[in-house]
Amino acid sequence: MMIYKLLRADEWAALQSQGETQGAPIDVADGYIHFSTADQVRETAAKHFAGEDNVMLLAFDDSTLSGDLRWEPSRGGALFPHLYAPLRHADIAWVKPLVLTDAGHVFPDDLA
Image (cartoon, rainbow, N blue to C red; front, side, top):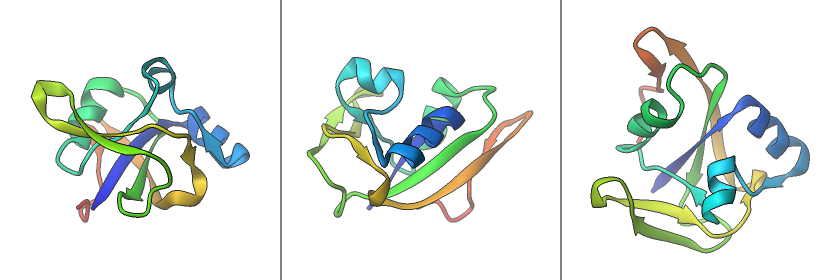
């Protein structure tokens, strides 16, 4: 299954240059990398990235992700994937920029 991580431009640049990251400030504070499923990522973007331009959508295959991936309850009791390890550039399946419109971020049509 594909899972998704949203990064701001500076966070994406750091991951590219360093090859891995402890994530965004919220990830560092919580002690794990926050991911979302295809069904959850739009709400994550609306809640945590509203009005922010230059947001990157990173896709990862949960079966090949390096590190300790756990599915834990979060918003409304839904299970979210959390990675208890650094986020590695080598594990990215694909990355795409999200376009910001007046209605919010535009996600790829083939998000699954």
